[in-house]
Image (tube, rainbow, N blue to C red; front, side):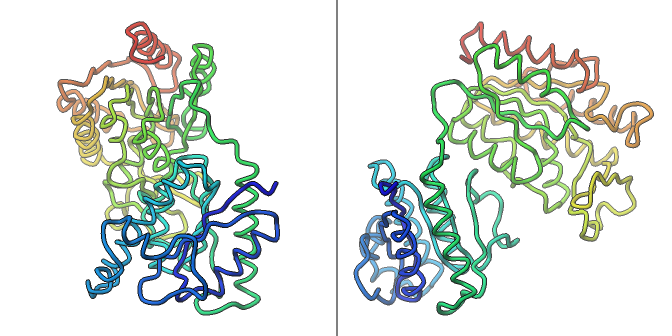
Length: 409
C-alpha cells in the first residue's frame, strides 16, 4: 500500500503551505509524493523534486524567458507545456501513479494540459477555485478527470480549505491504489446513445458485438459524455465507432451550453477509425432546464424529460442546417465511414402519434442528407425507425462486412 506515488503540482512560491499540507497528508496515508514546481517569479521554501527551471526547459524555454515575456498568460503556458511533457514522461517511466494539481484560474489552466497528457486510467485530480465552472470548456477535459472545489482556499490554510485538500489527497491516493486501468487487449467499440426511453439500439447491439469478441462502451451524449468519447477516439482507443446519437452536434450548432465542443464527430474520422453514423435525437436541442431558453429556440415545441434539461424540437430549417453540419464533419474522415439513415425517425418521441412527431421536418432532413453526403461516405437508407429491429440488423450486417474485410478485429 506504500508503493503509489502521486505527482503533486502547483506554484510553490504562492501556495507552499497548501502544497506542503497535501504532501504531508498523502505521506501520512502511506503514499509517496513527487513534487513539481510551476512557479515563475518566486521559489519554494525547500526545493521541489522537479524544479521550475526543469519545467520551463522541458517546454523549450527558460524561466528568464517566461519572466521577460511580460505576460502572465504566456509565461504560464510555457510552464504548462513543460509540465505536461514531464508528467507524461514520469508516467511512461513508471515514476508516478496519479497526479494532483492545485490552482486558481492560472493553475487550473495549466492543470488541464497536465492531466490531458496522461492516458485514461491514470488518476487525475484538480483542486481548483473554479471547479465545475463554465470557465472550463468541455474540450479541455480528459475523459476521466476529477475536480474538487477548493472552497475558502484563495489565500492561506484554514479549516475550510483543509477539508477540501485532505479529501483530494485521500481521493487521488485511493484512486491510484484501486484503479483498474483499461487493458488494451480486447478490441473496444465506442457507441453513443441516450437512455432506453428514447433510444434502444444498444440493448440489442451490445450483446451481439460482445459475441463477436468486442467490448462495447456506450457514452451518454450529453456534453461531457461526447467529450470523453471524442478524446478516446482521438487517441485511437476504439477499434470501431458507432456514433448513433449526434445530438451534441446540434446542441453546439444552436448555441446550447450542453456541448461536447466544436470538434464533436471528427476524432474518429481524423484518426482513420472505421465509423458508422446515424441520427439518434438529431432533431432535438438540449438546453439546461433550469435556465432561460435561448432566444433562438423560443416558441418551439419542447419536451422536458427531467428538471435538469429540456429538449427543443428543431424546425425544418434547423434540421437542414444539422444535416449540412453532419456531412461537413464527415467529409474529412480518412477511414471507412458509413452513414445509416433510418428514414422513419430518430428517437422514440418522433414516431407517429408521439409528442415530437414531425414528418415534414424529417423529410427535409433526409432529403438534405441525400444531397450533401460526401462521396467518400457510404450512405445506406433503412426503411425503418432507429429503434426498429431492421436498423440493428443493418448495423450488424455492415459490421460483419468490416470484419470480413479485416477492417476491425
